[in-house]
Length: 120
Image 1 (spheres, rainbow, N blue to C red):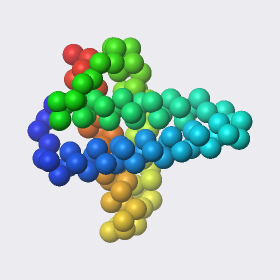
Image 2 (image 1 turned 180 degrees about the horizontal axis):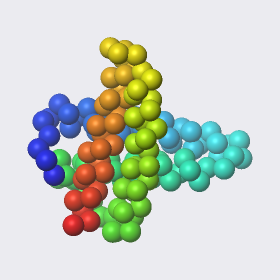
Image 3 (image 1 turned 90 degrees about the vertical axis):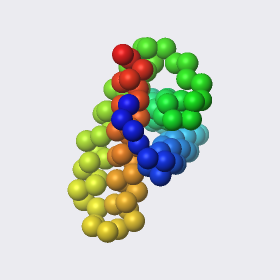
């Protein structure tokens, strides 16, 4: 994996943690309402595995998911990129929203790279 400075690492981990928390909240809310949660659950699980992979790569934390789980997570995260890029295009230049979206995009791309490296 390419070298990433500590600030980018910290911001990426925080971004993925925030994304995971938002998806967890959505999952809980949808479950309580009896709604279909399969997509939210799949995304939440993929973000969690991407986050664990980055923490494993950068912080030496344990990572023990199997190849199939890693591949599935990588594909789910990759599937999120077009909508994130679309949001980025619509965000106003210099806005805090644009900054958060840029960080989320960077974090997802790094998580995908980390997962790809685990498949080699």
